[in-house]
Image (cartoon, rainbow over all chains, first blue to last red; front, side, top):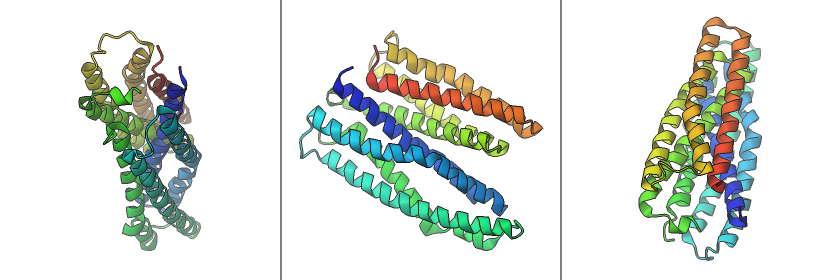
Length: 157
Length: 137
């Protein structure tokens, strides 16, 4: 394998880690939203932390190996699809972090309600289904999907 | 510069293939985390979510292979990809079956088997994407 193929392999591996961990976190969040007991919601929200290391490796790896590939493959500095992907990478990170902060607040609330009798609670349900917090996570997912589209179609290339 | 010479008509099937397999990887990862946490019902649900990912990934793989005229190729990376999807569905269905049994019986052993099957499948998928992105020959 030549340098280009190695870099592409690491870049794609990082992308699998990033998107795969995002899918896993989404499934765990949906399980938390649909839980009737606060203790179940708290557990699913805690489990999201287990996939975060993989996501962080993916976030860093896609950027590092992506920029290295940009240089190695000889794409010009004016390659618009790469700049667009970089902007979307920042957007995905921003909204992903905001969505994660909202999930962390929900986890703390779920832990408190679990310790105080573990009964279904409207306040927790409202927090888990908060449209702004949920929209942040959706926005991060849409940005990731858009990056994948750009990476495959390479518009303007 | 493989990407630069790829015809535009190959893009959509490739997109479906990559999207489906990433979805599959994420859902099996969630099932592994849930199985290790002892959540039988949630692990089963997560494996159910993995099935459409496998279908889209498999359909995309066959579509792109036909476009590239690689149906009868014996290249290592193609063969590894076939194993990951063709044998992989057996692993996925086995994990689904065992997690269903776990959900019904509550036996801890079934949870351990579910976690093991998910781990094996994740490893197989990782080998496949490494082989396919590096075009192992």
